[in-house]
Length: 153
Image (cartoon, rainbow, N blue to C red):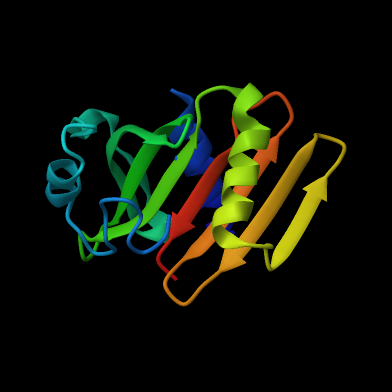
C-alpha cells in the first residue's frame, strides 16, 4: 500500500523524476542542501505546493530539471518528514517519445533488473533494481512519460 502512495505521489509530482549519490545529491541532504548542490537547476517548492504522503512520512519539497546525456528530465525530491533528510528522487522524461531511450539508459547504467512486471491491458511495464544503497523502480506506461522512483532502502 505504501508503494502505491509513492507511485501516486510521483505521478502527481511529475505531471504538473537515483542512486544514493544520484548526480549531485546524497541521501539525508536537506531541501536547502539539494537546491544549493543543483547549481540553480532545482528550487524549493512554496509551502502551498508541497505534497505530503503521511503514510510514507514523505514531503515533496524541491523540484527542477536535469540533463542526463541527451535526455532532459524533470526531477522531484521528497524528504522524510521526521528527519528532514532526502529519501526519494523521482526523475522522468519530458516526452513519452523518450521512453525507450530512457529505459535503454537505465539498463545500460544498472544492468538487468531484478524484477519486471507488466499490465498489458493498460500498456504498463515496471522494472525494479535493488541495491544496498538504493531501490530503483522504472515505470513506463504507453502514451505517458516514463519515470523512476529512486529511494533510500
